[in-house]
Length: 119
Image 1 (cartoon, rainbow, N blue to C red):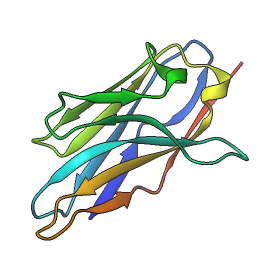
Image 2: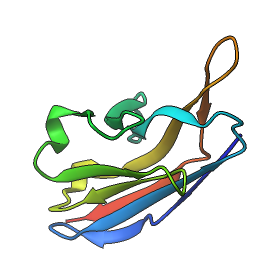
Image 3: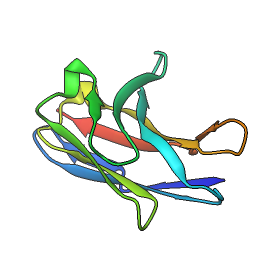
Image 4: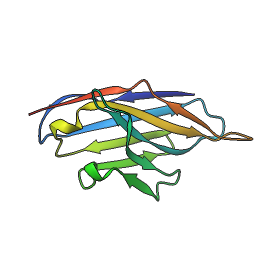
């Protein structure tokens, strides 16, 4: 299984970015997928997750109303639309995917992509 993230970079406060994560290599597809962020000197934390059908999403309180997670199952790709960015959103963002298995599912992580928000 491979997860490839794209779309990060440097943006000014108040700006927007759109992260993408393309997943591949799972025979039976992916169940839950999402984004986690790790700010400098801090632990990795949940940003947003989305279920396989896209009907249920979950957000960290700090991003509610500003970030939107979406999913295209035909492309095995998830997106994170990040609006009204704040300096405290600066982090490495990791894509997460739960690969469906015959006996049990397995969790996978992307390499991470940097998002820097300047004040």
